[in-house]
Length: 463
Ligand SMILES: Nc1nc2c(ncn2[C@@H]2O[C@H](COP(=O)(O)OP(=O)(O)OP(=O)(O)O)[C@@H](O)[C@H]2O)c(=O)[nH]1
Ligand SMILES: [Mg+2]
Image (cartoon, rainbow, N blue to C red; front, side):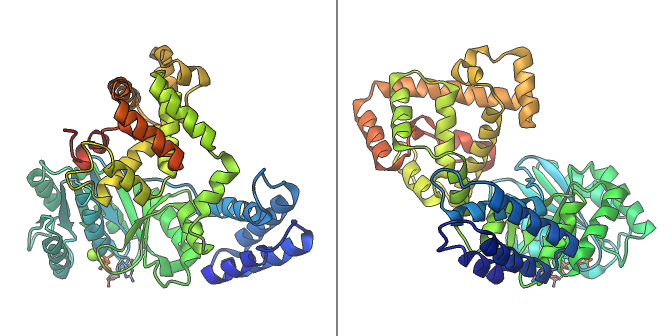
């Protein structure tokens, strides 16, 4: 679908105003692209109608060109079509993979194993497909290649026993991934087996693995599995080269089963977290879509950055300053952030952080931002007022626990202490102000990224 979406948007490139004829042409192209990608026809019509209406009825935000305005509208509608993002968190958990024959469960088990392992989490695999002897070999080979232990019992026909024994063996592992057997269809015996394994393992995540080539059929499939075993997320495989990817994705979104990962090839690295905005950016052939969306919200001006820096130096650090730092850092490109981190005394010198460790710390920052987003202005300016019921309200608003909010507040308190120490060092102060002037990368001084990456990242400690 991507090339036709790209050409649709190219038409807007030179336009100086949004007019009906132009939008009609663009929405027509988008409609063709979506239908070609197997997106349901009715859904496609609704989407393109909305795109046309919103492009014409709303005015571009200040500082946005016509092209950016239309791109934003197109993005927002496609994002609705694809559904909300949900992430499988980097924590101690048991993950069970379910699905029909040949959808990619075993391959995905290996990919997920690698995903956690490279993020510093001790991971193990259990081969609970007891129906096909070759299934054990397949997972065992994957595990050997990745140096991830695999538990299996040959000639054992009781999948639940394999799971029980495997979990006993892997008590010291943080993430245990269970590969299960497929069937031709969602039969009673498959449901019974899935239920029994889910019960035995107390799986935190039950991920349905669906092959993108089933197209719109992915919808009813996801719904049926959801009814049967309450899946917590969907992994769509074979997104590489499937003309029906749009059908599978949109159909799954309509049954409210969040897509968490997509498989984009046969190799162990071919797994991506499903991130609707990034995905849409790629469909539209634009790497910079996040940049455009930010423009539509709020752009931190240079003055703002400098003000934040001065606020830091003055010692009047509030949660608002903390928030600004996170905001700006999350806007920076990975390589910029890496450079910046490496320039911080005590962190960068000893080899720096790997890109995986950076990814974990970025995740933490995003999490913090959500928490700060659910605070009131008063709370941001006077963090001391955050107590009791306020803590609970903030946790609810951020979809997290009071303990997590407390942990974030502790980070903030620590940063405050570090800033105070930093204030007594003039050399560092100069360096910070220079960074601010050079392109807005303030405030990192207070961060101990080793701490931020925590157990998962195991990042270097400050010296
Ligand atoms: N191109 C591509 N191929 C994939 C992807 N994921 C899995 N495959 C291939 O799909 C085939 C089936 O994958 P498996 O992982 O064995 O599927 P399964 O669900 O475990 O199958 P059963 O155990 O037989 O039910 C294999 O040839 C994989 O290499 C993907 O994202 N892209
Ligand atoms: Mg398998």
